[in-house]
Image (cartoon, rainbow, N blue to C red; front, side):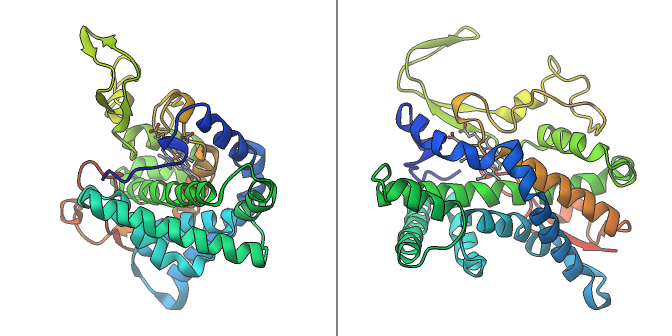
Amino acid sequence: MAAAKLTALVGTDPPEHDIQRRMLIPSFTVKRVNSLRPAIRRVVGEKIDALLAGGRTTADLVPEFALPVPSTVICELLGVPYSDHDFFEQQTSRMVQATSTAQQASDAAAALVGYFDELIAAKEAKPGEGLLDELITGRLATGELSRPELASIAMFLLVAGHETTANMIGLSVLTLLEHPDQLAEVREDPDVAAGAVEELLRFLSVADELQRVAAADIEIGGVVVKEGDGVYLPNAAANRSPHVFTDPDTLDVRRGTRHHLAFGYGVHQCIGQNLARAELEIALRELAVRIPTLRLTEPLEALGVKPGGSVQGVFRLPVTW
Ligand code: HEM
């Protein structure tokens, strides 16, 4: 990922991080996410209806399914107008693509924070519904959060809430199309979908290369990492470790995958993981069931993948049915 400095959540340390995280946890519990499942089903259903409308038989699933599903869901959760999606999707892409310069990434992050600054002011004047509105009345009005802090948190939630899941939906569809036997299992047995999501999270590890700065000298495997050194943590490699997973390079939706690191590890472990799981499960299963003849229109090699250092994914996913 290009180096936009983050001032919220993953960009903070305890005790500031604990305070921010505690404010958000209630909105991402399994129970809360389960209450969002009907809304997620509706969003997924609408996107598939649009694909099938008017007897069409081709589409690019990135702009028509993989991206709008999580974008719409995170907008509804936060209370952000989806009509602004072109703006925030473009800025997000500039912020996280490895091909962006550090300056471009910082400018994009600043544009998104500026957007939230204005949205917060508009919501203060005319409150709406959503997590952002709850944080305005419950934390901003009480002085617990300043406006720049809230704008940074909201920006991070919006970016993290759609970019990773969108890439994961796109790559998962592609991977299942390349493994038709596994796709058939997801289509034919509704109980397989949740396990398939865990296995795809492990297998694809889209948010690879987590970054940290060593807080003290530490020896790992005979190598001393010095205090202040930057460290990349390749969670994709851990998720393919033969010491943990039998035959790790094989996709097996019935593996019973557990303890993968696709959502990170420790205090910064993904706060949106329950939401991501629900979105992936519903999106992949509904697509498999409602469009059983789905297939690529171009060879896999022609698609190209996002450059290393970005959230892993494809730019386009041309399909027919
Ligand atoms: C498949 C989709 C997703 C993947 C693979 C993913 C992956 C990750 C990973 C690996 C981290 C840890 C980063 C680190 O330690 O440096 C993380 C953190 C985070 N994720 Fe996700 N994520 C996904 C979806 C979501 C969603 C839907 C949200 C919703 C808002 C979200 C919000 C966050 C937040 C706020 C953090 C920072 C948590 C903290 O610092 O305490 N993510 N995610």
